Amino acid sequence: MASPGVGTPPHVFGELFNMMTGVDLVHVPYRSNFYPDLLSGQVQVIFATAKMQTSLAGIGVTPMSTTPAEFGKFIADETEKWTKVVKFAGINPV
Image (cartoon, rainbow, N blue to C red; front, side, top):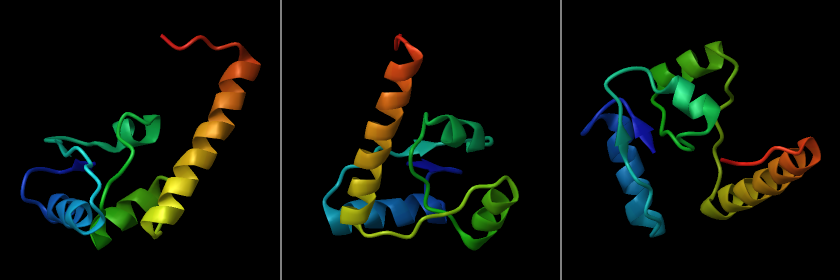
């Protein structure tokens, strides 16, 4: 879970999510732009403020609003899809 820093609204939103769902997302505070890591998959989750949503929309990212079960299914489906792509392309993970 990326955020612009400890104690920022996205960080606190993420901790609320952890508390309410019982999951254990690891907080990764950034001093600079976390978008490259988000887009490359180094960080999988952010809890965006309205300003961040506008900024993300500007680079083509569509925020998702889902239940934990829907999010779990999305991750499972994406993992299956990209596993097929990696195998098809003969990419060997490092």
